[in-house]
Image (cartoon, rainbow, N blue to C red; front, side, top):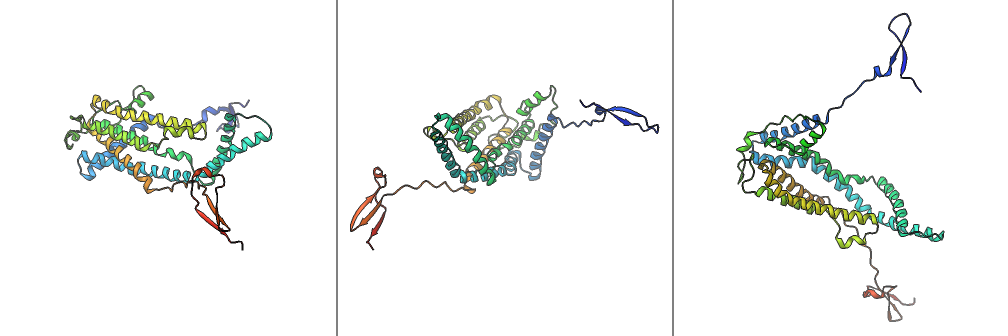
Length: 353
């Protein structure tokens, strides 16, 4: 075992040696505390809101939605475009992946038949999926596709939480999600230096002139609930219930069922937002930021796929009946498709020459 001590010469001219521990020469580096990082990001979000308000000279009722749109344009939209571009490549490559999947299914069964060995359907599916997974990785690497980029839009979630925490403190509320996280990290967390903004009480609009108070007509909580519900409904693409049993693998069927459950859960949570916001008396200033961000996110979800369009995967060709004219007599060759009820679409004439 290597000793923790090493003899090093002393500065004296006697040539004597003294032992010095490795631990005495270790430099310790301390990263920033998580609470400090949270506080700095919340203050940065507050500065962004204040900057938009002071530069534009607009009232808070307009500058808050404008800030929400700017944040999504500069952070969320590039991530979504990046994710859609990789999803487009994956869709174009999907027919090849499906073809390899069919090939591996047949190869596993053929190998078992040649070896005269029994293989259960589940075992055959597992083997074919392992082969397909390896081949899919090779294809994605060859075409420079990163499957994890489908989750890239989630990277903007910390930014949204930071902006919401800043708005919460500007309107005088406490107890946000980031505050709860800070409480878990430290017993006595230091609150971010974000003061309440008194001018919010006089720069409202329409039926909510005071952004520090709750909506007196409860319209904003209803709008928020409807906006979040619409965003979840339009943004989550799931399989129909009757189409799930038709999926080729058990893994795909489980994933489809999971996505259906998650979508229904988030839709129910969106409807539950309305009574929660009303009971909590959330100030109007915080609600208009949330509503503006959600509505713009929904518009992005609908518009970007049309701008970054992906050609639909071509459907397989259907076999057509062929009529052959031999010696003046037309005969229909259906090639095993007699029950399709299709009319001949091509006539080939043999003249005998």
